[in-house]
Image 1 (tube, rainbow, N blue to C red):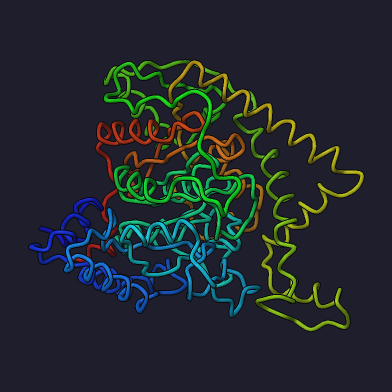
Image 2: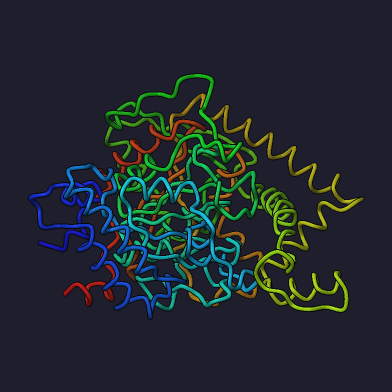
Length: 495
């Protein structure tokens, strides 16, 4: 029998809450810290390991159990947090030099809710700087590596969180998804990644990249584990005016089986003339499994839902980033590089503090918002975004969920796309439109290729139908029965 840290999250927490069981929050945290110490030197999933904080939180959970109090549904479960989310008393870097020395003064709402439910924060994970990237190679502190092949990327921008879960360093992690930054790394590392509906989860305490697109969500080994963390962190928050209860028609009850489920096959989600054969085979198998379970495939078209999503996204997101990142000026916090005058200080600080990809996106965003160009680029992109959301609404009148692959290819090699920004951006062609439309989407493992690299498929649902989507994903996950294998380096530590 394996270590309790490898059980389901619900089982882990149940055992911690059982005073007759020898499993304690402290024992789970110590095993997580042991694995991080043994493996993270090769993975670089973490930017900061919070040993003292995790042990203190574990002691609090164990004391509650000893006193006969229920510490919550995540009792003692080790949790990793992407380093663009605030954790009080820990460094907050966003993987950028410009936040050097900054320590978070409070917990992000999602972190506070997870800790209140009994989770123990073991550390902050690596990411593409300010969440801008698809490989976690843009971190100012070096790349994270894929646990299944250390020569390959884990995806991004939540690559550290995905790698930590895939390598079994932690059972749960929090990430953020602006254009696929939870789902894409989940797919490349063989874990589950869920992007909730926009507004379902508070963004308070998340450092903003693109405020109308950003969303916090879970990474986990299974859909059930992800759903448990999501249930803890979701809900309106007075500190975030964009979080809300979804009005309108009542969301459907979660499906009890796949029989009768209407599954949309969107023409624009097809993989083109020369798809990666392994990715195409994984998607075909998911379709076949759904059909065998009694689901009904519906042919659909979302004209702006394919390749058109990339230019829309890479106008809207950089425009918002240009505005959001103006606060990093060298005056109030973080890095300060002296200049001859105030403008010189700004330029020197940002020039040294921001990496190349962040500078590129700020420049693009500033350009598309500038006089003479805003009408041609930004306003047209926003009109296209509204049309895209309407097309999704019409699609969901005919289908309960949509099915696609998550990424065009399995994990690529470190450095393979670094010199070609457009090639890197295309990695997100099947994820960005969910953020543009505000709909929930989830990536689940769908086997591996001959090289042992994870494959994945993605399910989408109407905005507000998160619970139904999670249950449909769990039913499909059960039918597929193809979790990614344990990485070899993790097997060494567990042996």
